[in-house]
Image (cartoon, rainbow over all chains, first blue to last red; front, side):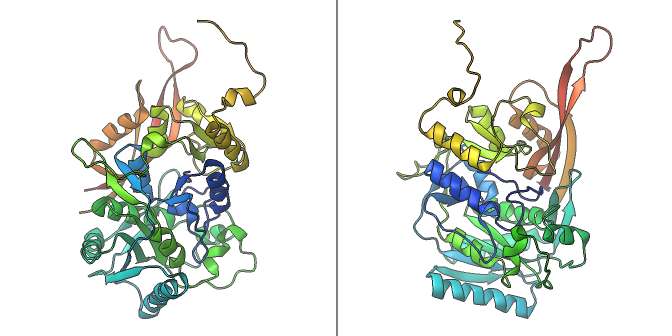
Length: 344
Length: 66
């Protein structure tokens, strides 16, 4: 299941509001691979052994057949803190780490602070999707290497993001419209670190709390009930599958590892078919289930790309398609009219 | 190391989409994150042109490592 980050998806474009759909697809499929943007609800999360939490870069590499995913009972989650955080914000994140250790029993640590502030900046692409940059990418990578050397098998990054409480984009987001302005930069951070280290990675932005908004959209509310976005990331990474490189000279992955040949279908918003994982699946003949209800700022549809997909109005219908495929049913048999066979 | 945003348009040829995007991006740097974010249909023009679409061009937005 893919809901691309930072393109304003009506479902999953806010604070983990794709999670109910993910739970449904997990039940229909028995095994769902999805990414933090779908699963992260700041202080809210859902842990399901059928759902594999895989960051976007690794998800693309998995779909391309470059990586296998090795299910894991428990990761040692290292935490990378941005030196740009104020002392109070830093302390709040340290307390989240302690809370997840004490209350959830997660194995967390080591903790490393970058040598200098990461200098995150936010921007927008010509499509209206959110993007972002890091002023000091090398500081991120060096801190990540320290964590790996100290024994971390997965890494949670907390970077200080620019506060802009009066911006129109933030006001729109809190009212349930527009694009998550932070999401693009978050994806850049986790892609960069995941690719460099070959470990499961995910990101939580550090921000000053916002004033109460009585008209806050329910889809954005999960980000305003706590003081940090870190709990869901720690929970997600604590059971994230390990990443196993594949290739002619690579060792065989252990038994039980998930490989791209096992992908039964990919579920994606109907207007967001231009990502790498979707294109990989199209090339290999994996059914692509395009959810029309989940509109975004993009209109990269099957018609425009000239490709074949299974159309679903909603995630509930998509779950039906997944179940049909899992049962070996021909999707054509479930639609009318059913055309006559044509002998060759 | 620097992270640079890039957006580019190019015309799609026959064959798999992904390899065409990767080839187009490789001319500019090492792509960290990318997606096709728009598709336009090109109409046939000029002498001998027939009705219907001639091809497609796509816009790709990316962040490159340089």
